[in-house]
Image (cartoon, rainbow, N blue to C red; front, side, top):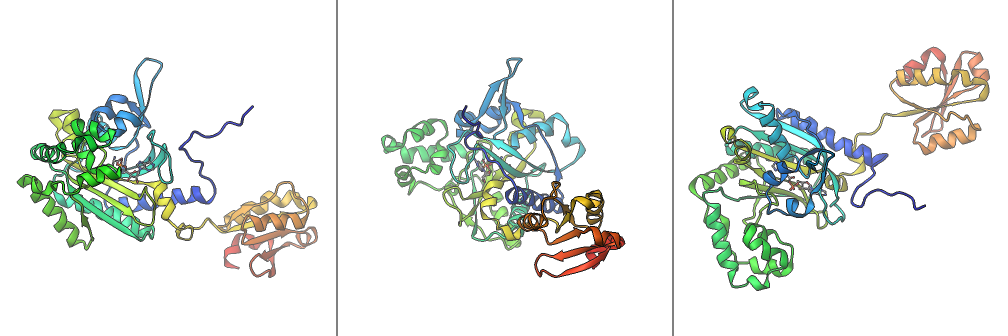
Length: 415
Ligand code: HAM
């Protein structure tokens, strides 16, 4: 029988990689809390309608990337492809607007998209996201971006580029869509098949197409900045002023549109240039109309973003991950087995991780194993030494050994 393997586009993380993932999450949590964000945990699956209405029927995510299935009651359920729609649902369902004037929320969890897997692009991946619900001010956008930059700085990432744009609002976006259609109308037949559909359904997405021919066709397309309404351009200027006041460097990219329909005004992306094709480590923007889309009476302006944790993992160096606790390997003989668990307990009490080989093979094998596990010390429970009330401690780096009285094992860190 063929061995069962993991589903394509998913990952097993273990040892150092699992530590790295959790380390990234802990830095993200720490920085978010310093910016006054509180955690929200929502379900991994939701009714399909939440995403199809929230993210938009015309988007790639909804039209071809969702993992949807019928549950036993015949309802359509979807594994979340992103976190924002769920946060908005929870915000409304739990009346969070009544509890806080401003809801600053962060989340961490796995997302699911049926994309073509490649390096940095998976079908199950982790996001660390932040959302600010309750302010239309550009300062909120700028502060959210500064939070993201601080996370990346703390993770010691270099080669970062922040791209910003304004995608307008329902007042001015249609003018831009019309201008873009006009620009592309004469070359419609040269567009790729996907872009031909996008032309009618979601023309802005053509700006984001990776097809070289489409890229060529959008060269010289009008910039959205030319058609922004007064409110949107003022907001965009406010964002830039906010970023400058924080000394955050940015690059304006008038072609930046993101793959979700809910964005209004600000759209941004942080790229790590050292990564390959999938170099967007963080993406986000403002979504002033999403809450109202689910409940007209509760219209709430909002802005948010999310990191792709697996992409960060490709750039974060092993050295910058917090080390695991220092390990003491406890080696014993069959005659001293009765002291094994006791000694391990004392070692943990001293603030070290304690490991052993329960089988107690030869001393040589136990040392070899301790070395493989990267133990800093080996505590040897020798029968004669125990009789006399002490054990030997070997420093695995220097090879030096010293006597430790049984009562002193708990003070190992001070010795
Ligand atoms: P997004 O741009 O679709 O935005 O995803 C955010 C980040 O998740 C991307 O920049 C990327 O790092 C990572 N990501 C996306 N797809 C994959 C994948 N297949 N494999 C690995 N990593 C991936 C959102 O999801 C929005 N909810 C962000 C947001 C929050 N906007 C407002 N609030």
